[in-house]
Image 1 (cartoon, one colour):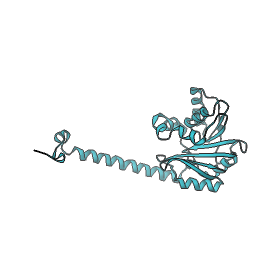
Image 2: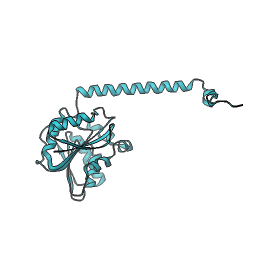
Image 3: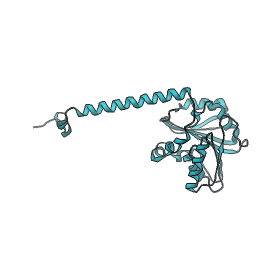
Image 4: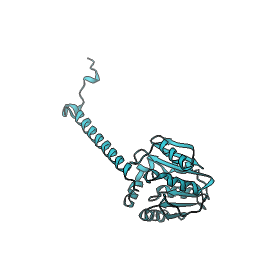
Length: 230
């Protein structure tokens, strides 16, 4: 006799009647809690802008997860890294992307790594020592103010999930424009899971106000890399 699959009980259903709907309920509860936390974080960050604490620097950039969902190779590709380039990073953190870019522009290239927190620069220096990198120059500075570098020094500038943390990102982008050479590019990367995640049109609006022109994009709406020039 033929029995439709929908009429059959799995072994788990037989031993634990109703277990499937319990798992579904637990999943929905955790999903609702996750979304609630996300909403709360975004609400807090909307009204209170502050950089990720230095104590969390290694945690944010650690492990294979970050490398898979927002790989350094995306930044290297967007910057079109070549040996000998001079590049500036805004908000280097503990240096996951800084080191990848520095390696791509060796032997004579330099990355000026700017961060507002001395603790982050200490973590960056420790990473440099571990990986034997010597072409990164840490700079302690507030990206909203005057970054202590000469006008037009950079062939490229980049930031990764940093721009929306800054209270006035347009001020930072004005600095970016000042530091860029005439043919230089600015690359901004953002990730949906960041509590400060901005829509692409928001970043484009900031950049346009600061005098930068949008020229292209890598990735997709949830994990994008935008490219601008003067």
